[in-house]
Length: 504
Image (cartoon, rainbow, N blue to C red; front, side, top):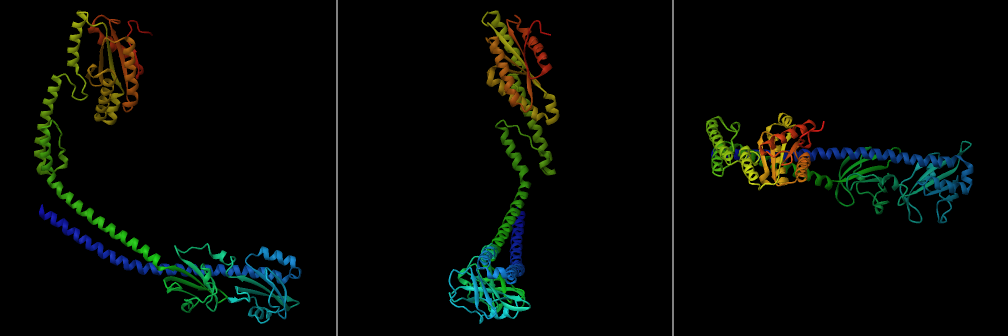
């Protein structure tokens, strides 16, 4: 046995080492593949955001073009005010003539501090026929803004410029991206062509130079970079079409590392549990070889306490079969002797009720009491379990035995411990001296009702008879009760009192 224990221990050590190696390999593989996957996802996400950003700017440009093409809107302050309300992305709309002079301004609660914007790059681009989106610049009042300019064309000549201004610290641009989540603390950042931040969830960063701008090369890409917080980020970036702006999607590496460690620790814990289970399984297997002897010794000791438990031969190796057979034969003989002793004592070994022998002895005593005029009345109930054979055939004799035990307990609780007798099979009798007819039927009905809800789908049929109402012969009582029982069995689950002239 010691050799087997050593083998199990050695196997456990090998499994532990294997789990450790697997843990290390998985850890390295997980880091490499996980980083590549996240960088790829962030790069793809940045491309999607850049497309969305361009679509939003094109929407603004189209709205401004509508103003540029409609003289009535440009020259009517009231219509311009309505326009600014239905295009919430634009904070200020300015109408300029071909010299850059301001003709109309809507959406600006301050009076313009300057009257000519000809020097602005967005005017210069638009006056030469190009729709233009500027980089981030600071207005005279200190606002960080982006300007979108559209030329006003009349008779194939450029007559002026419509300029839409988007404040970066406002809510219009942020509403496009603030609802986008990338992990727990991931975020989107938008940079203009010089690296100044156009959008950032941290409003304090807007208008400042991005610390990762110099790392952004080509139209798209990804990498692990440190952001303004000096923490490593998984950064995927994409250039916005026609703008030379960049959209970056940033995910902190520490979240991924934390999740990776959780997974790794779960794998390690699972491996340890598996190792422990294998060792326990091996120990259990070894103990199965020693179980037969221990079990037989235990069973022999149980005989001293009157517990006659057989051993299933199929649970043991061949070399123990003969020993188990001898033991089971001995138990069977002892059990027979025990049952014989119980029979002699008048107790039914299965249910604990009195047996037929005890009933016959009681009848002899009752006859003497009647002859001595010391017994005024006597009630007898004869009971039979309905559908008992079907129960045995369907669920086995063990289920039938349990029903008989439950019924015995019910009768004892209702009529008294010493009044219940088992005749054999599923037939019982209850003998009640000095009981009225009403009381006798009440007891019978109580037994029937409780049996109906307690006997696993079975019910009882009951026949009752009384002395001296039905007969003056104690010997006829059982016969009359049997006739009443016969009538109850026709409908089952019924109590029938004996009548000399049964109703038809």
